[in-house]
Length: 465
Image 1 (cartoon, one colour):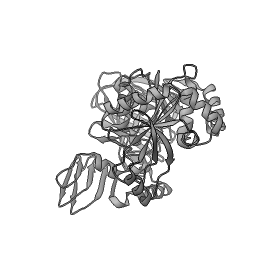
Image 2 (image 1 turned 45 degrees about the horizontal axis):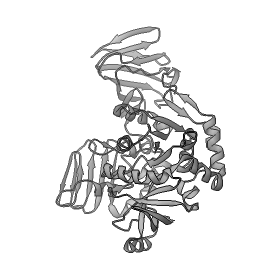
Image 3 (image 1 turned 120 degrees about the vertical axis):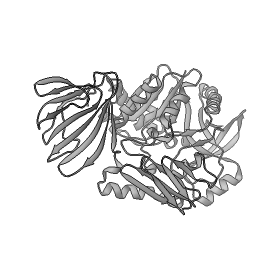
Image 4 (image 1 turned 30 degrees about the vertical axis):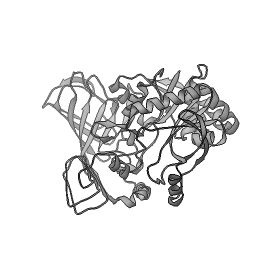
């Protein structure tokens, strides 16, 4: 049995301002209608003998994952990490969940762009036969330029048709070394995708990273169901060392092979990589959204809403969102981490979430905020209900603009339709529900001395938040 394991814990800060802590790059539209996490779900569905995927993600993103599974009609097991501990613990937890069946695990990140899914499936099928026999398999991408942001795999002797022994793994090199690797023709980019039997991986962890195995075993033994999620034992997993699959196992073993991945591949780690993957005009510009360029070449210009006009730019990235605009020459994009660090040190909320925030019941969008009031647009999906709650510091006014709302407001329960409204005094227990078959939309006006999202006391919540 082939068991896909999708690692969905990354944050993708290098694609800020589109990617945020609460809405990372695997969930954003990298092009119109295309979401990376949805792509990997579809790739896994197309595999021969593939079981329902295991998705390992953090608690903050659990409902984003669940929504994508629902949209695509895919059953999966969602394993929630209490904290990020890199890829080796995530793979160990997945191996331990089905150790009795000893499946072949296909461990893949959630945020890779693959042009040809059929070619990817063929490469996995080639590697699957080797992994079934107890070997470790990784996937290498033929480099087309000396990239310093990827690790490399040195190709050894031919092991079988389309399979090579791994000579060694090399960490991200400096440019001069990367140039030597590419010109030699003996190196692949390391895709970070692996195939191995669960039992073999656990055996090697026992040898080379026993503490990871011990804590992951304890975390799985203490795991429990929460709605549609599997929560790992928090104390045990928090004690687990943080390490990658490469460091913990792959660089220590000899029976590892590499299958060439001839699919068109990219991990979309920067805005320049998105520029390269998109279609371009005759001047080399990639344009998305309401954008106009004049006398500009080799630019990536993206608008989420407002008109963006670029004049006389060369090799520049421009990204507009409702609450931030990012502009940088392509040659400076490697310094993105410094920008994010400064924004976080300044306490800027723009690194955490978009103005539109997604919840399991729907979403809310902040329209305007001032010292003592805030206006939001709230959308509730059909049949969904918010928590029964109250606030200590704010009152709320609700105006229904579309659909039907069933409302609890203090001791009253009633239904509002379009153009009707209600006032919820400070401290009143209240709840909002959409009993209809179309999305409920309403405008909420908050007034009070403190308007933060943490001023919520939940008395009942179907999502157990």
